[in-house]
Length: 219
Image (cartoon, rainbow, N blue to C red):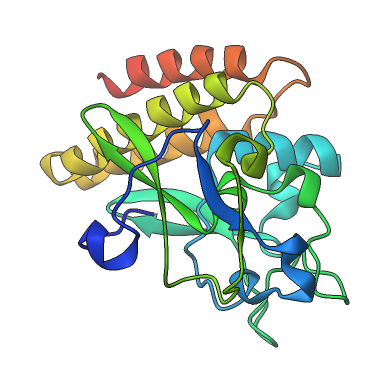
């Protein structure tokens, strides 16, 4: 989810790359799960997230809907996000000890926290959010290790492609008719989320689907 704020007000004012050392280490959170609660619909899922969830949970996207995932409209586009429990406003994947039960295949935004991404000039850098995490004593560690994503360079390329593709559609949605926008949303949901991914090279599948979707929308 994009935030329209002054970067200097929410960060240390620095821009980072994946090989940079940043104060991120928190001793496995020491039982704290505050960042997994009261998130509203802000944990938006991208195709890689859905691939990881459906592959590791051995279920379909539709099976996760209603319990773990819900749909919301963001700048005209319907996109999925993690659903928060109503009782204690926590993620459905938190266990009784307050730990993430899907930690090894958790969504990208969960991995990112307390980092953020600053998109500019058709690329992005990382920044450290200084007011979000309640842990005060943090140790330095490399961003790539914090994220824990294999072939991080390829993942970052994918994230960039997905972000600017969605951003382009969100900037254009008011220019099209309501009927056309419905077609866009149905195509997005079917292409990137509802149609099951095969286990294997996600990025190849994504590239194929991205080209198909661009042709279907006409961009």
